[in-house]
Length: 227
Length: 301
Image 1 (cartoon, chains in turn cyan, brown):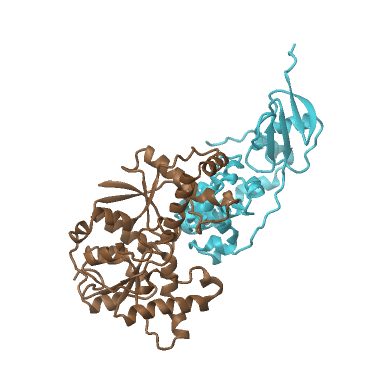
Image 2 (cartoon, rainbow over the protein chains, first blue to last red):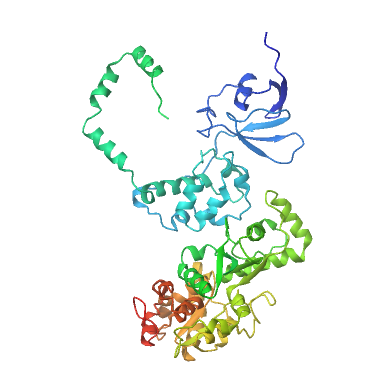
């Protein structure tokens, strides 16, 4: 017979609930009756949809988490911020070049950065956000791309920045430029594209298309994942 | 090699790379290894005078915290932070002075930046010119392989290297430190009264007329007094004084004069031609330097 789980108190948007210990924030919210229509995506810590802010009882610090990753703790006051209104620029990456002023051209507000480091503290991925905003300010595309690599665009840095900067779009621009213009082109990719163009995989694909749903499911369950 | 911490600042990594390269190469020749500060951020640019807005001081103070960490971790032999850009020098130096004088201000900032270690006030912000003065002009002249003979150089300080009084690199009314270095390189110094006047600074964004007028006055004085070239240490001054097409449009008889960083002349005199970066200057100094038989394209004499 399973023993009764220990319960912890959490406060969701100010309302108190008792939930079993050991649940993630997201599972705990479902336990108390929330249904996620938005604000939940991969449930694996990659999509950035479940950004959450919380304070622990008695602590002055505002903390951040991904609701699908962080476990509930007793005395947690939380709310999810599933969407961040953010200025997003459209550009044609083919017409851009990784030049020092490219960041200021699209996101001139990065010059308002005062190095307060609030963005870094708001990052659930522990990215040194301020450092890459600063690298963007001095036009170092590679540094921005490397430092921001783990960004999942949850938006918390943009919500917290007192200067109104949207760091994650700056990082995205850097990674696009870095990938397109600075990293060496992978030879294997080129070869594979040629193979696809030459129809090497057509027969196999046609076979899949003709399969019934049940056959496909069976095939999927039997798949071997290479590591 | 004597290792000193070095703060480049944003401009030296983008539009003034010739300043950085000529300075690092010359410093190395002098036995100084300028170790770039790890994880540095913008200095904050203009030093904020608002007494109640401490947020504007997190940037320069964070740089000082980084320097404190780097020194403690053994990256440098002295707790000194060397700067090249006059703006960075001014902002960092004034920040350091303000928190040293005002313990309450420092406490507040340290508390605000509670993820960083507390700044303790032990870092010394210096400009490369001060390091050279301390080394002595003999040390500089001892490395000269190509004396800048016959080159008449007007040193120009602008505002930020000299003011406010007591925090600048030298006496704001009668500075001599750059003169000393240039003379040690074998150049003839032309002492212009406007050497500490403002170039117009950030008026270049919205009021180019002001910049043109001020820069014209300075450059005109330099050439009227017989200077061949102007030497300075501020990327913003170099930008303003170097945009001479703007001046020529307003002052038809202005003929132009090259403007370079003093470190470029030092690298030239030390024979470090490949580190001079003259090709990046707004007014190309190479025709003048070739004429004076000091420089030949592709290096060598």
